[in-house]
Length: 272
Image (cartoon, rainbow, N blue to C red):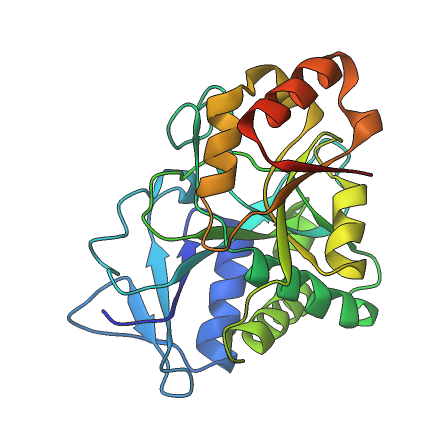
């Protein structure tokens, strides 16, 4: 199946189902009879929709079905302890164990330009979803082994938001604004180190600077970070990473060790 982008939804996931309904009802996606789970739209020939029966975090087997895709965009529900309404996006990967899919100590491939542009478009439309926080997350969970970049696009954090058609429409509208324009590249690309799971400083970087971001290792993942993982953060990327942006106050007790490791890898450090 030839496509520039593969959108991935799951019937197990309530927000995913709300978004897939938006795609079939408003964007013209319909199932290809001989290729069950695959949906196409004559209005968007470069995009296919895959609707799985399985959990999104464990779909490491899509490459064979979509060998020509340039990026997988997973459409998912988001959960948080605070239950704050949120529209989030993030790259995938496990710096340590793989409790939520993927392989241990493996990062998914990143596509910084798509993430950056999506976040910008969402923010342009935030008046449509005034109760929602719009924020990136640090890198976490599976899948990690797909051969093309992965971006998770999520609606959170409770059933009320997962079934919110206005939020789903805003997500789809923002995403299609990006996916239907000419492919681009960020002026500069960095990996992120430090901060919390919702890294507001890195969020600001995406919205207010020329930088795009690859993987982001939050403070709680820093104990797993060694030279080999930093190298993986740099290379598991479709765009060239030129530096590490470091939340200097968000490294905690790992600060000295992390800065030494980054120096040993030989990549420029930009402190924020």
